[in-house]
Length: 498
Image (cartoon, rainbow, N blue to C red; front, top):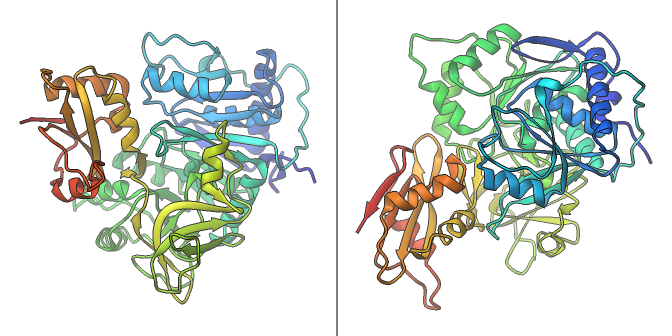
């Protein structure tokens, strides 16, 4: 079996139907096709061919998506890169992914960062090809995306998603969300995440719809974009809903064009959902999934029962089961680890067969999340096995922050846990045990973090402590640390020394 890529499978392929746009205006399917081919031609001239990796470090934009399409036209792989990365984090992803070409701009590149890859500046992208770039017919197993997500080892891992994964995910979403050619998605979330790529771009394209890209979120920009482009849906994280409800009471945006809003990536309270829905007249549905399952695995149906506190049933084509510590299925209504199977499960972690084998067991993806399934198959997420912090929809892993702290010569041990935050859900808090006799301040360690970690990973509070709680076998007792950790009112880093 071989297939075309999603843009060229769309029923609107090659037409003048609006396809993709941003604040500068809309492009038709025909125009997107022409510009994607021009981009592919430039990539080919830079030595990119089948199986090569193209890094794309750009703010949300049409050009970011054209870069992905250009790579796919050559049978290459795209790896989107977070534009807030420090130089260290950027160099790590480029090296780990074996990126051969980086599409970027001077505005987002960390200052004084040496690059060992060829660079193409976004300002030099062509709008038309000088020759002919064929539309490839691709094996479904061909790698399409490398999406980096942090892991329990403390270093981000590249999640390998092939074209079969993307087709299964987008067709399942299109069916579940009842998408048609009249639908228009508004991209609110950053496009280095698979959520924005699949939910808000590839799914509407598959049915001949359109997508409008917001460069970055602010409540005012979102309100203006909805008024101008009249989207029928958009996807958010709970922190965005919290920002929207902070709008002055007299400001009542017109969301009349919006059929529904999807909220996911982090736990959301029933109170925030109710408040947002009531104030703005929005139909908000919750969803759940992982990068490793190509985005969404469960979602509240548009027309089915809306059970607050759940993330809905499995999306068509996927299966969800809950298992105990031995891998045996648990009865309905009892807690168990969430396992997912189906054609959306990733191929694995790039270059990490051992980590892949630990995560995928007999075709089932072990999520590390604890949930409960009710009699209707609706899933409720109740806990996490993994030591992950979800800050406003961004997955942060304490081990990465701890590993960076350990590079400071005055640090003996550290422990990072999540603290409750009213709008972001959780933020990282660090407890640091200094080397015996070392003299170091919390301010110095926060500066060390800021120099090597992107802003959202820098602890919101850092405390220097004389000891750390430990369990009977001597390991740091993180559950106890979480119990001791007070909520954080602000995200400006705070230094506390004892």
